[in-house]
Amino acid sequence: MALGMYLFYSALLGALLVFGLPFWLFQMLRHGKYRAGLTERLGRVPQRILAAPGTPSIWVHAVSVGEVLAVAGLVAKLREAYPQYRVVVSTTTASGQKLARTRFGEENVFYFPLDFAFCARPYLEALRPALVVLAETEFWPNFLRLAKNGGAKVAVVNARISDRSLPGYTRVRRWLRHVLGNVDLLLAQTPEDQNRLIKIGAVAERVHVAGNLKFDLPAAADTELVTRLREVLARSGSGPIFVCGSTMEGEEPLLLRGFENVLASHPNAMMVLAPRHPERFDNVAALLDRLHTKYWRRSLWRGEAVSGGVLLLDSIGELASAYSLADVAFVGGSLVSHGGHNILEPAQFGVAIVIGISYQNFRDIVQLFEKNQAVRIVGAAELPLVFMELVDAPEVRKALGQKALRTLRQEAGATDRTMQALAGIFPRSIK
Image (tube, rainbow, N blue to C red):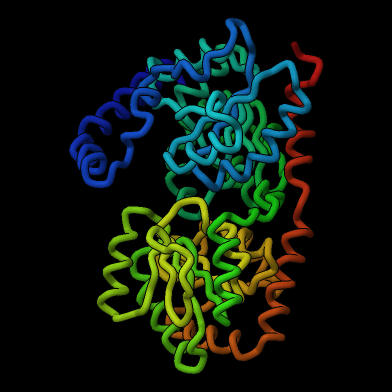
């Protein structure tokens, strides 16, 4: 991409921000979104991450919670393999930022700057990254150019190109070829992703398959909620337990309808319902009120007995461990045309997994699980029947969960393969 193209891109990005300003302001005022870290995004380097002058770093960027979890093991191995470098982590979302600060220390975590030179340059000058590692498909033209010009080696790891994004990337392939020319190494999740990266302009010799880092995630440890809830559920004789996570608008009515059928024959059944977006918590609570469903809000729950109803998980960061309570897990974004969410979190606990037919965002994972008969894929009309089938056939339910856990373990090892590939462009002897 010639300098003129970068200027055109920056002007276009600026215009989009200006014309979208009413929307951003509305989201800030109404939902509090985008307000956190605004000055950091605009290029103000926070004092907490400023180390001694001249200290070189390895910069890892992970957009949100899923990416932060995926790179956690990689960050640990980078710190071990390159002790002379400070490893810092940036995120885009507030939820990702919160988790990253907990995992990696506040002094090492910050918001990723907007993709303008005046926003990115202060960070590159302050952190002096010798290696930049971007998780999944973060192709920011100005940032990549500035990082490369500053002498950093640049790698994209855990890369994937979804069915939805491929046509758009293909249309700007000529531009992307120049952008991706600044990337020294691209590690794809699957051979299909490798082919797609080359198709949109990546240098073929720099693209390799390392697998999916998310297969290496350890099972989430019990949170305080899960510990208390497990005791309460056992004491009250509640069961079976459904955990329905990352649900999107339009899915909750379908799930609650299926759960009503279960309650008719299993009056002590419980559902843990976790909407994907915090701004929808109140709307889902209102839906439960309209349906006259017995429910408890996690934010108001103080450990009282729960049975024969729904626990609305109106919190952040507690869903992953809550899957350990489940007899059946439903992973949302799949009964509506959203593309689905990650099914690996319930798989880590050997839980029977059910999803809808919209799963293109995680097509490779789902297809692998489907091939191993480790997931049930259903339409909205089938959902109540499948819920009842799994409740009434514990041997089928248990076998489904065990196949999920076995599939997960068979695919582990992406973190080690990623480290080996990074050593090829960034040897440990580099000072």
